[in-house]
Length: 118
Image (cartoon, rainbow, N blue to C red; front, side, top):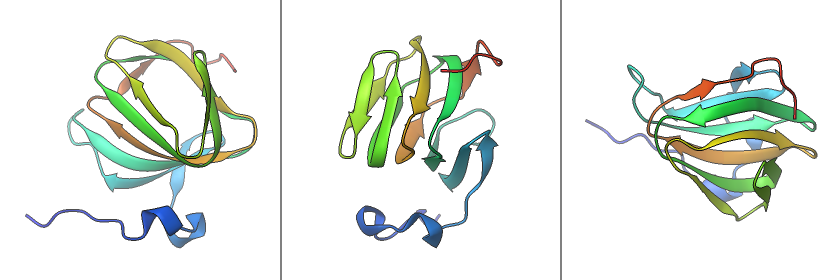
């Protein structure tokens, strides 16, 4: 099986890859698509003011902020910050200015408050 690869990630122009809608204001580019609720790797692109409602992590999730800034209930993260969300953790996520992040998850999250905004 050939490994999936995204070259030049640190110099990546967000328009150089194809994104698809994920949530309002948040687009996704799957690098390794999750199969049957398993792990996945993707780029997430937040527009300014976009958010993800409160959710619970079923498995480990890691995020590397590549551009802009992302916030959650525990803090504010800028380009170069690496965030680890442990299984069972609960939080909301938003980006006031917009951002691009590399995300890896062991299992999909459970959305708790679909209508809640950050």
